Length: 323
Image (cartoon, rainbow, N blue to C red):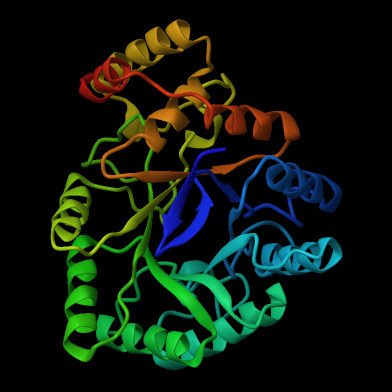
């Protein structure tokens, strides 16, 4: 297992997504996946306080509640970093994201406390603002997160699905007020790239853009490092499963060109498409931690083995340059 760091704390270079754990993935399978991940050296798990409110019978909180129970039953403490996200849980059952709790000072404080209770921890390892809240200023949200860090109830915080100008505003607010800055950024990203003029099917998803990567590089040059976490890294199985076709946003000539090179590299390495994609992401510049969602131990083992695959500089360049 490769490893990386978040503000000096070592975590696995592969993040396990727990969105479906305890709901669409049954409890026994969910526990087996977590156990296998930890056995293989995995130490970074991702969830959110709203997973999965959108499924039939779902209320949100199922994933956090399951992870809290798994932690207690296994005696897991600081060795596993659990990241969670707040701001997207609906305030009205069935209303969806139009009624999301948002990121006001009061909403952040309340949601963070509930997440700590469900996960059974005194301090949240990593807490993200899940999505933009157009009704709340970035400054108010930043102050709310800074207060949690000062209280000791959050170690590290980050932003997910925020436009780059909001990242810059967050940086500026942190500098002006002496607040801690968000060091971890979570966006949708994979090897295949969607068209920018076509919306993604999942309305809550925000894809990493060249502008975002430019921002991260520019910040690093000023001594302000960020960690990028990429969800939907395997495009929900579309690289390998005929029953999971690519969505319309990927219907352009660049997709065929990239898949051709992906298959070349897979043949050269003896790896699967998924494994090449995960290895490519792990070697990305700027660095990316791929987040994978799996529903079977076989799928998890495939992803874990990808962390032992190192692409040559030539292979990585060919993949990156395919158009």
